Length: 214
Image 1 (cartoon, rainbow, N blue to C red):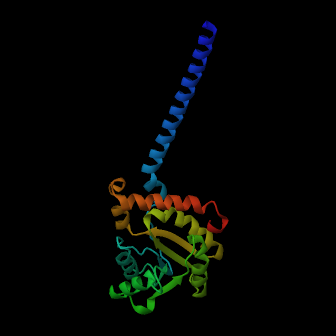
Image 2 (image 1 turned 60 degrees about the horizontal axis):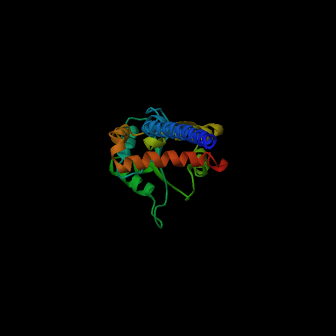
Image 3 (image 1 turned 90 degrees about the vertical axis):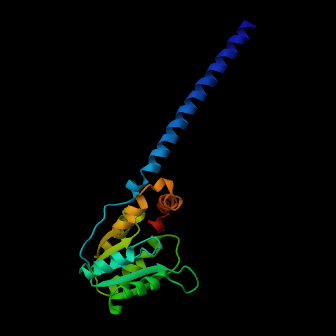
């Protein structure tokens, strides 16, 4: 009896130790996840940059963005002499790039200086970039200022340099400063902001698993 009781106590103690370790491991994992979640803006958003370029690549079409006004202002300040609005279609024969071009023209950018480039639907940006690089090369441009979304800026900088610079084209990836201010203000309390940060983080993680997307 006493021997069986001792064995039971030993087994119980092992279970307690295992449960304690499991709880500590889960707590540490949860703490890391929470820390990474609140670090997303710092991890994903690069410092804003402005560089003289031959062309501005406008890829930040969004209802909540002030990017059209920012791109038009960059043009007026002489940062670049040409603008390319790029996008894939969102519906049959409907491309946000066309609307962005018309918006820039309404803001005073001469029609001959703003172009619209239609991109195919693709699983990731890396599969579209060769088309943009070829378009830029065909025009003889040697430098690009890429205006995208703030939450994609670090990855866009890495991806842009990988594709543009190997073709001898300088690229600077940036975004509209006011978009960052809007996006990062109490972002964890707003569904669409959390959705954008988490969505980009998941997409980048997935893209890095496939050679055609990195």
